[in-house]
Length: 429
Image (tube, rainbow, N blue to C red; front, side):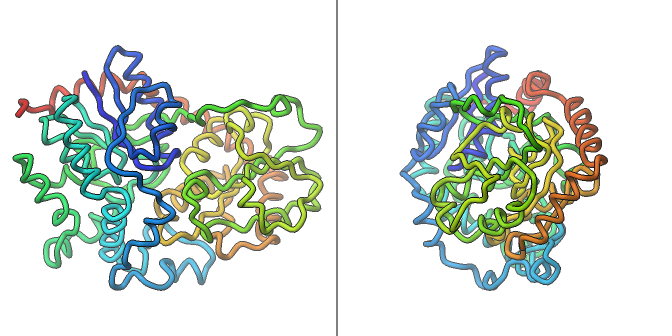
């Protein structure tokens, strides 16, 4: 088979796809990854073939250029602002329809200008994939699949918020208009097809989320283990040395810092104030820009721009992070108790951070401390001390590792994809 992966301009999204892509390649299938030119070097660094589609996106500029949707103004989480925490069944601005319209406007305006969609369809017609696997917001990938009669699957990088939104506002999509249909239907007609629900949620969906993480009903999910991939890096030797005291990792992820999206994450100053007087060895994966506001680093903090979590976490007693899927998976893989502080960028907290924080907390393997905008040093200190001093958190984290290792690996999923592709692939136009 030929399998075309379509990724969006975030390393963290691509890195979730890489183990599955390599499993297919190792099984003898041809694989290619399509993404914007912004991702060309990152795709090349995975060792997999890639192709650039469309123009440079320059996210830090485009994110600010998308006009707001009516109703999508002010705080996106009024309940979370009152309580300091959110729940997965909340919706931005209290309305799933407004949130869905905002999502489609952003994806279309930032990730998929017309030139990118045209390039993607043109490449599919040239390369002729049998299966197209898309990031859940790489929505024009469905058009590329239909253009060549390929099967179409999604691969989640986190919680399936898009399916949740469509289910929550389905009646209004019929009565008030479906912005996704309005966008994709003309594109589908150009390739001799019609918009249907599989264009939104795929013919099936690969889900790298543990089964105890919340997900919506009504979607054909194929569960698989998230094998953490941290990208190429040279690991400093000190990472492998036995720490002289308990070690804690602090990270704010890589997606927002790559795109220079400011004002969304926990304050570095608050994070460091929380641990300054604790007897810990703190490793903070912050870059220079993230440290600009910190007047002085505590003596117990070592900063490093990047270090592979699969190398660092085996020596850690806890991790503080904002709920990114890759970080969450790495923490489970190494049985590390988690303190999660979801970021406050619009509605992103419901694209994984909240569901994963709730899951870790409900299973006794972590703490949902507070949303980033409500974080204080005292709250974080208390949360971190709890997971470090109560041995049940480490024991429960070890149980989660056992459970996740029983999930199908990417290698195990390859025969499933072969069977589903044969079932859904149509005759070639």
